[in-house]
Image (cartoon, rainbow, N blue to C red; front, side, top):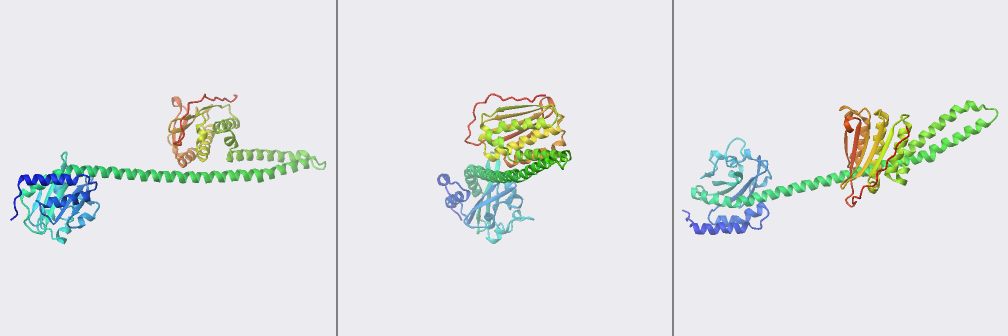
Length: 422
């Protein structure tokens, strides 16, 4: 028969357990640190702490003494646990003289194999509770049948009450650490995708510029030589100049269109004079070529911050603004188009607004132009927002581009306003 432990000795053991817990930062090391001290008054061949996960559906076990399949699983369904009634708060404790024949541990789907594999006869289980919530259970097992008594249940519950707040804190810390790791991995993936998208955008832009230069150096030069040959032919007396005039005019129009394509492919104004000047030039050309009396307006309040963006991001943003202007001029039946550029502490915002017919809900999904803008924005990690203009009239497209961390916001410059002649 086991010797009864006096209350004073129990208090010393409880104090020893508290000291041993101090500084333990992991579940496994914590249960290992206190197992010997617990064994001084609660003998066991196997001891474990079962911790309920935050979702309340799964649990995991940290063992000492005997390694079982319970401790090898990082997560197991509570509904399959032999002590599920305790973890669900249905029982205040579970005490058995022989777990191998106790029906409470054996039901359909129960994960009870370690009881038989390790010959765990006497078993004692008490809940670990924090603020009325069962966060886990303390379990002691022995090969010897009929070992534990109701007095052991009281002592085990005292130990569980000591362990519960400490293990609750460990669980919260583990969750925070896991959350931080997940967030760090997500940020790393996002940055990797962003960098990959930038590289793709840069490659596409290089190819676009290469094509533009090839058109300029070869195709446009060939057309220019052909035009001059036609002009020389028209001067010959045996050839009527009027018969070649339509061909000459067609070539001139072709060359004019080709120059426009080349300028679009290699925006020299952007490279030489900056973002605002390039947008202003495109606004002027787009409204003029539309054949309508469209008034345009540009407001630049970035104080040059927009030109401090990475070159590939700056070019991509310019392409987006170009596309938005073209959409407004060609499809909105507007009388005015405005572009505003604003530098905020974390973002640079480009807004293109028109006073046209606006867009219905289905147009937002079916518009090829908006699809192109959304794709370009995604490639540079920018956000796109499409809404109605002031007073519900027209369309407003807003692109928000993250600013480089080292770029400090500057004061707003005076607005630059330009209007086309009606």
